[in-house]
Image 1 (cartoon, rainbow, N blue to C red):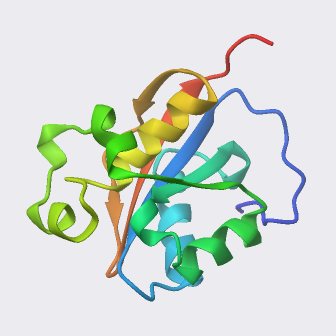
Image 2: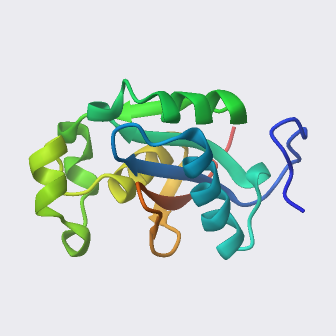
Length: 145
């Protein structure tokens, strides 16, 4: 059973962040289902999740804000310029470029947030998709205190 948002987080050696892309009006429930699917696929739980990120173009998306509030996590938005150093050519999309100004959203957002939170940021497998959203996980090492 996955922990709920009300379950206190336990100290976990594996810390991941989620980069999320979505269509306008995507619901919290769809984003949550996709996020849980992504975590479970890698044998992780919500307790491993340290933060959420998306592109600044989605700053007004209620579903993203509702998800962050529900999970009690910070939601960070990155501009296309901030994501430029985290792009991977294999995931570039002409539609994403035209819509958001960034060739990709989920993967570079996950990498950018992971790099901000620790060291050795890297993608944790392939991104997952639902009808209206994408989710990529990035793992990182906590820097020594």
